[in-house]
Length: 206
Image (cartoon, rainbow, N blue to C red):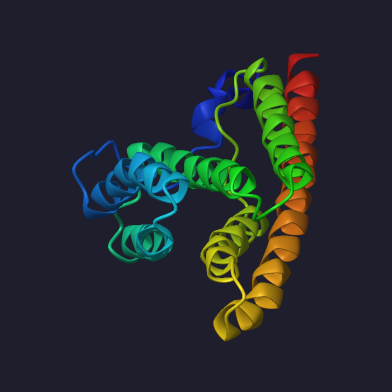
């Protein structure tokens, strides 16, 4: 049996330079984003749109900063790799539900994006059956997430009949459509990547 066959899958696909450190600036920023999720839910459901907009904008800024700082100062960690996508998904989920509850976006859009999350979860469960951990984050998926996180504050601004709302509305929906498309493209790319890993594992095991 070759060395490749005996190497743990998680080690084969770990990100170089990833550490076990917990208390880092990027991880603190990710934790703060998670703390902001229930605050945002309360703000948007109580129609305190100004403060909800502030929380969303801070979430987007910290999402950018935690990744930038982690890469720039070699602070990439396993905890951060876990917290960052969880925070992204929680903000997307809570914002979608809050905006749909307020009739700012249609419920079918919620179904399309939640369908993408369920598809990604199914792919992840599939590769874990073969001993693999989480798949590396693809830049297309991150771009889709950024588009959606930019779209949500603009959708809040677009809720109304003011001049600002009329300007924000087409820009917001542009980000929504790009974000949704990229989100699904990323899902397909993850599925293709997962299929390649599973095929390689089967060939080694044969």
